[in-house]
Length: 262
Image 1 (cartoon, one colour):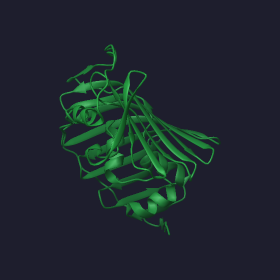
Image 2 (tube, one colour):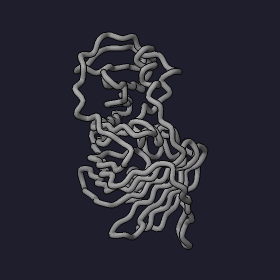
Image 3 (tube, helix red, strand yellow):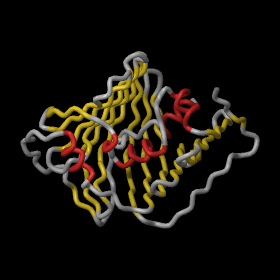
């Protein structure tokens, strides 16, 4: 159970979302124009013209986790102080079952069922989960943004189903692909594949919405595949608000046992 809860918190957030804001407008119904050929650097430039400007973000969500053995329904409260910290609380019937405080340098996590907690950085956690993670990747997945800094990479461009696709041009075991809307250049899908390990993560975004603070996807679907096993996490965002002041309370309950990852 502890690994499933940690995946829920850290690997991704899949959803059929309804975000609430009086300062927004949907763009999901906008007709997609025929994509004309653009070089990779131009697609990247247009993508980064979509600014995301906020100090804090609050999300309340219904969450469904499923794999071959089980399906779990919980709620999540997500607080983000941009580029500084993320606090995620997982609750069942109003009771906090797990909580994580994530910063650029550290991950702190506890779960109630087994009475365990973790304190450390992303390196051991990445190895344990089998998924390459850091603070920016988690933050970007929540915001519907490319998990990598596209300006620092090299990509091969193509057009697939009237969307722009960029494939990482580096010849390595890890392959990354990014898909962009032909009108607004927001991310519609991103995939990471590690062939040797039989591992892939696919994140699909749809029904994006324009806020004063930036474009946010209303629908997100994240599937993870590892050695023939599939995991899916669905989130339904009930509330989204920007730039409110809130705290990030986190403390491990007494008597919990620390998890050591080697």
